[in-house]
Figure 1 (tube, rainbow, N blue to C red):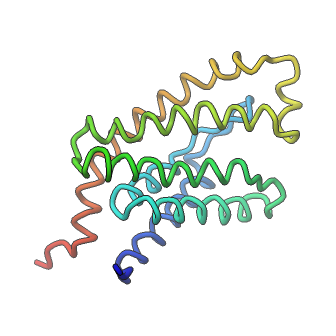
Figure 2 (cartoon, rainbow, N blue to C red):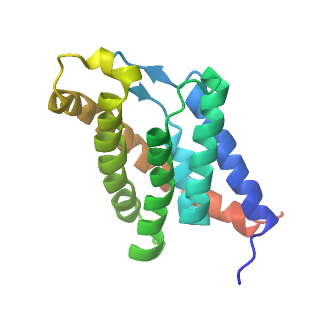
Length: 183
C-alpha cells in the first residue's frame, strides 16, 4: 500500500487554496450568459497531473465547495457543478498518467486538457446552466445550441491559456514535489 506523504497533502492543499483564490478574486469575470472567465482550473490541472487523478478530484471538490461557501454562503451550491469540478480534477490526470504516461510535452498536456474542457467546461456546464432554475430564467427563449455556440469561443480561449500555463508550470511543480535543489 502506498502511503500519502505530507508533501503531497501540502501541495494538494496549496492547489485547492490557489483554485479558491483564483475563482473569487479579480481574475474572475462574469458574463451575462451565466458564464464566467476564471483561471481556477489551472491549479486543479497541475494537481491532477503532478499528484494524480484522486488528488486532482479531491482538490477540485474542496475548491468548489469552499469557494461556493465563501462567495455566496453556499446558497447556490449545486451538485451538478460540483460533479463538473470533480471531473475536471480526475479526467485530465487519468489521461495524463495512463494514456500519455506523464510525458510533459505541449501535445500531451493539450491532449489531456482539451477533451476534458470539451466535455465538462463546454458541454456539461452549458447543460447545467440551461436546466438549473437559478440560471434558466436568463436563457428563456434562447435555444441550448445557441448558448453552446456562445460558450465555444470562451472555452476555446480559456483552454489555450490553460495549456500554455500548465505546460510551463508542470516542471516547476514536479521539482517542488521531489524536493527541488536546496542550494
